[in-house]
Structures are given as C-alpha cells and as structure tokens.
Length: 89
Image (cartoon, rainbow, N blue to C red):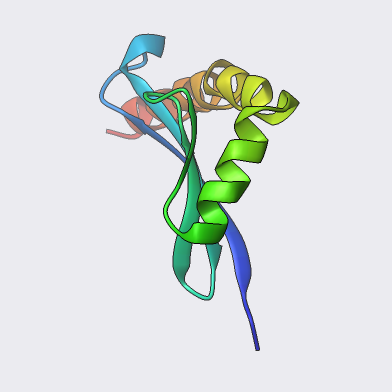
C-alpha cells in the first residue's frame, strides 16, 4: 500500500520566538516531497510533484497560515515543554 503522512516540528534552543523554527514536512512512501520552513518562509518542493505543490501552496492562503503557525503552535507549546522540563529537574 501507499502511505502519506505529515510531520510538524518545532526546533528551539530558548523560549524566544526568534529562536524557534517551525517546519511541516509532507511525505509519500517515506519520501519527503514538500516542506514549509519558517526560516525560509515558504514551501519548498523536493520532487517533481513537490515542486508543483510548493508553487501552488505559495500562491494561495496556505503559506500565510503556515507563517502564523510558528507563533500560534510553537511558541505556546515551547513554553509548556520548557516549564514542564524545568519543574522536573
């Protein structure tokens, strides 16, 4: 069978918003074909299909939504994770 999945990730060294990188990667059969990265600010395609999808996504409302996810998704969760880690150590 075929497998499609999405991985959303927040990488950070501190709880400051400018130190956080938000990525969302799209995979098909274990091959990443397109990714949004907050450090790049747009979708990037890695395969022929991914390049076409990235172009379509960058010209639509999806890219604006993803740019806001760094603050909406990562910033909130980084605060929760760092607080939990600090109270346990």
